[in-house]
Image (cartoon, rainbow, N blue to C red; front, side, top):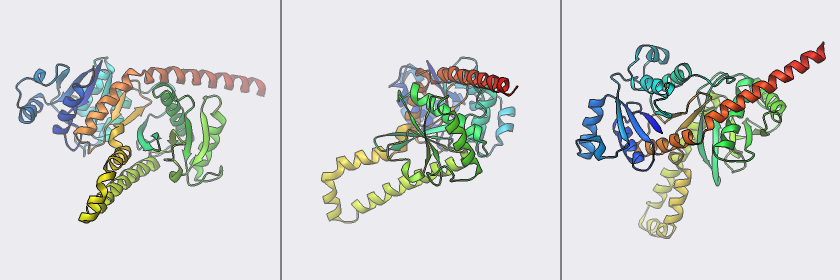
Length: 355
């Protein structure tokens, strides 16, 4: 198995991507192929690790040369179209051509979503793929879908987001009946804007046919109590929700650290509680969960945070290997084919009854 890594993507590339790749390569079975400017990558490796050959670090670590880089300020469609030898486009083409099993990038989000959709392609029956990160929740993880790839959505999109989350959680995480909720400003059926009201109706109507445990509207404050496995929303709301959670997590960490170091007495008093504090901070750390899965495309693609450090690249590469190994994408293709067949049969019966 081969994990493709955009070594030039992200605010801290290539140093963070290299460190993350080296650490991951030492722990996983797959080849980790760093895609980018080979000369730049090797110079950085020599500087960090003081080695002459890549094989001295890990035998399953490789480099694929790509001469161009898609910058954060590049216009996505133009970058994908004109920078054919960029690390991102080369990675997508390798994935499409079967030269890799999963692709990871922390680069330009718009270009990543455009490239994944246009080069790798959508699963048949999926109108719009969606970003689906895993977030910390009480004693479990919480999937958020969509986290930013589709800012303007139709009810059909939210239905398909829920279906994709349901399929992934069942087949990849082995949750028998994932609990799916619609993120809203209240739990009542008539709450929210027109998109949420119509989405609620569509999800409720299709829950049984999709074999989905849809529990209705969920408020943001209820999402993290461990009763929900996935929250569904449009990408605009989801991205604000995600970044708010990340910001609040940083606030908790900073405030806790400051409180413990306020004076000698609070520092001494904190010593017996340190194991518990470490467990708490680990639970709250989104880096433990890796990047955001891009569900709905024909091959596994994972979007790492733009500001990812080496640890987050390490966890995301491991996450990408699991994504490829668990066969969730192939299962999604099969399940959406079944859903398309069911829909066609229902429409045929309905049309016959009307006649």
